[in-house]
Length: 447
Ligand code: MG
Image (cartoon, rainbow, N blue to C red; front, side, top):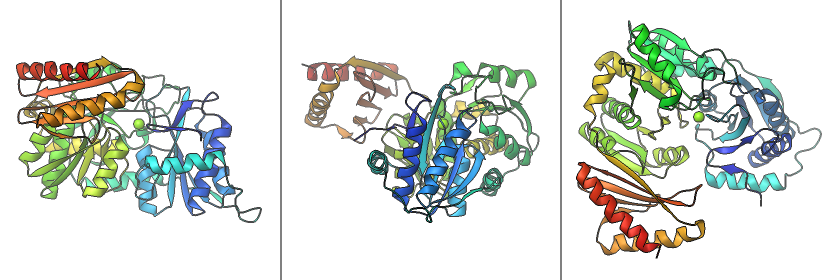
């Protein structure tokens, strides 16, 4: 059986991995999987997006699905639209933060949750043997709805009912579809908005669409230059968001996640927050302080979404800026995350002081080289050793050992011949001690 889905849908260089044929087979497979119903198809700003969306849509219609083309939208706009309109699925043509020659296909459930790995396996099987479909008189229709962006904007304004009058915000849209949503939402909240890279352009002339500190230096400078209260940067499809303080500094991934998670918990009067095994214990400390509880998941936004759903969490997020707001839908939503942060800064800012208020602990990371075919054996050995030591641990993703004053994560890399060790502790000394201990354990297990 072919393996087409990676960690974030089907993704690759257009014309090499992601061919027209593969796109049609993905459409036929989704249509057959659904057996009819209505599917929304959206795309980000990439130059091949419109053609790939047409191929996918035609294939879906040939399997009896009615297709609604929502045009160029953020991934969370598609998720929100599918959830709000009660559709049977969504399909997004996007390669998120990858360079312009890439594109991808990702499928969404009626509640806005990404297809799970099990669902993707079912789709892969159907892609290798696409069923014939309902025949000449069973085709579905192809329609359009340009209102998806408005649906998303209004839904965000419904749930973030805050007045941010007078706040000045710079938004860096990365030439992606966030330009259609985030500036509009913030203006309607009362902000004065300055935009960067807000012309839609799938060649990404403004900056690399991955919102890492080194790619958003223009935003940092602009926030300082115009005297803004904060800066916001999205990735290429706006399921992610990162922030810059009024001082033009990058506001940490874990710190911002902790701040907004705690605010949502406070507003809900308690509740659970899902985050992955790699997030800082600062998230636990800040969330517990307001009466919340943190649930740990495997790394990957779909695992966070699954946990949010299963555990009835009020919020979920990974420290890369993909945050899930289940009061709207289960797709990570960059513009909604931005609106919640702006509301927080408006009421309790400045952002630099909020970030400062989150406890910060030393984090150490080391890699041990390990051939792929030894990884399972080594991880079994590490688990055994941890068990023998009587430590408190879980195996949600790799082995995560919990101490009163820190934690250790030993996890095989999914893409490289490495075992990764992450340590976080209350002091530098303790972090180094734990790292020495677990480097020793992994090296002994390597034999
Ligand atoms: Mg993305």
